[in-house]
Length: 330
Image 1 (cartoon, rainbow, N blue to C red):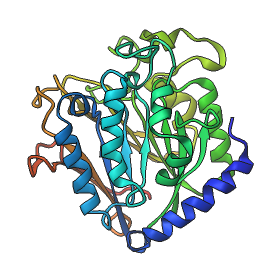
Image 2: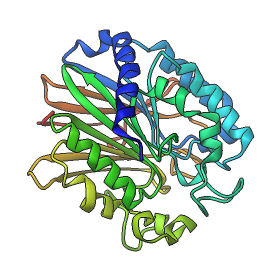
Image 3: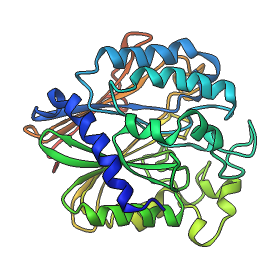
Image 4: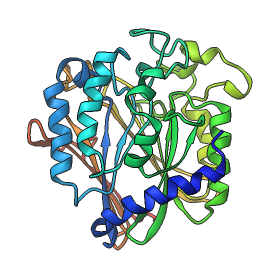
């Protein structure tokens, strides 16, 4: 586990990055980007993937940060990680980005999806020292890896923690996150993880497809046991008063979903699924390049969600792709 003495080192870097983005943070609203599973783009359509990053950079004064929900690559190969790095590196020291590793981003060899929790390639192409500079991270877990990270931001006058958690977060990962939250009791919190919601607007659990427990990593027990969406809600999300938003990908079918639930304190948690990879309904080739734009407005008490493709230069305006949560307690 990362020692909390290391948090002070990370925070110094994060503070410098926040100063760069002071224009964004001085407003009564803030906006950020959610990158859905990019595996199809990285494998087959790198020009579309690059266009996403170039567009974000061109809007760098608009966005406070970027979240990637995981499955950055399709086959966890060196070639695909090189593409992923070349795209995300365009954001370096311009827009912070936080990565959640998906089942396609780990495994014993390329094409072995989460048979083991081997994330060597992810950590090779995004070395920890570089990652913390570009992610505002104040802590990572396990130590000296990017497998799980916690970033800190001041957004429209409010302090936030952003957790990016591994595919099937382990019991010990949840313990790590809870320990950090205890030290920041007044911070609002966003959770970014790969597998959490299903496309029927429910938490992924029970007999749903693609549960973490159905992969090789799901055979672990004890502190290494994995958690699906329902378990993550019960053990972590609903118990923490200040978690406000949860983002995930992973699921096919419609590839989208939204759910508003009350936590143990009677406060609403806004949970969203977005995936536009190959074989998702409406984007069968997966080359459309859609991403999510999330805007939080403290004055209006709203969270607005839009879906846009820099490649196609168009929005998806159907209700499942463009919507607003009202009377939000931010």
